[in-house]
Image (cartoon, rainbow, N blue to C red; front, side):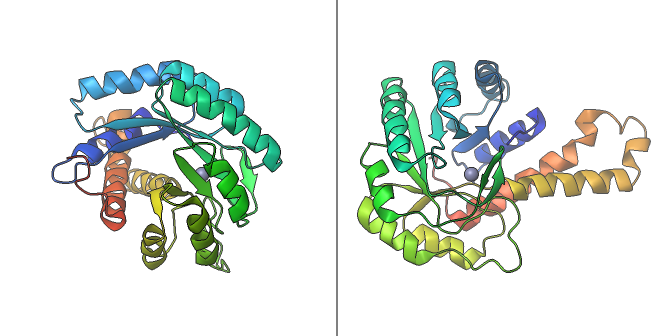
Length: 262
Ligand SMILES: [Zn+2]
């Protein structure tokens, strides 16, 4: 995904807000990781952000992961789900070594996650727990396993998360933190059950984008860009940034992550 600098600042500020204080995770995919890393480091200093901020590459290619390791990211995700399992294992093994050698954490994926994100299109299949175990054993720090979850908006006939798959994966992978992608639109009760079954990181992007677009549309439809200097991008984009903050706050409360940075 890509986000604007205003959205970046909104997410970091929301993570810092007392009493919510929570590790702000900034998930970005940009073609120039080293510049991005500098922007985040400088923004933290300029905005006086003192909660931990993780700069994480989401759905990275093999080459993209290396670029972000070199650029000083704190975390990468290698999405090798579209490779045959043997190749996914081989590439993940190499990246675990490279990432850990530089102090980064690494997330891997097994079983493609449905929908489209960053050009990766998946069918929403459920991962094979044995394949999850073989990737988990490589020493990854988090594992994203497909359990019927989908990126973007869920279709009306969506069957819900497969808790059977999630439980089977957790049984074989033990304490390894599991990651739930496609967090937008999953009912709260299913989110809570997934957390109970070992999900420790939930990716929510579409909902932030929808909140941003909705608030920006309202601003323009109300003619506020035509009043005074309301056309200034800093004013034009402010309601969207506020809407993202409100969405992030809501998710932090739902996920039980409030106050974890203390
Ligand atoms: Zn994803």
